[in-house]
Length: 142
Image (cartoon, rainbow, N blue to C red; front, side):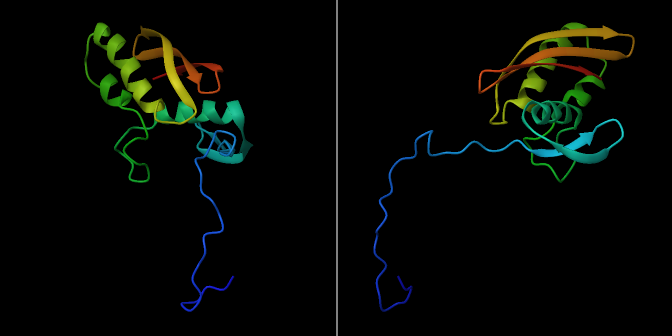
């Protein structure tokens, strides 16, 4: 079929609604990032890629880096930098971590928070429920 102003374009294709079978899942392959050293090397996929996303999203300050949109990152650093009572941390930490992770299509829910404060460190354990039904238990120290 030629595309010219002389010949009209015909609609040979019928467009219907997409079903779940028509939509391929987005691959989770990404570069492996060593968060402690900042080195990039190798390729990771599946659960390793999701774990890396979880850790990086929580440890990246939201609204601070122009390379990320306003949905990426976490406001945990701002919360911990203030001298707030532990009771407030117990209510706000789950909110800011859930907010940092829930926008990702692979994450369905963030639950089972266990927060402990020891000297100047905050230990946070939680469960990330994926849309596939799997659960990932994760711990973060800030």
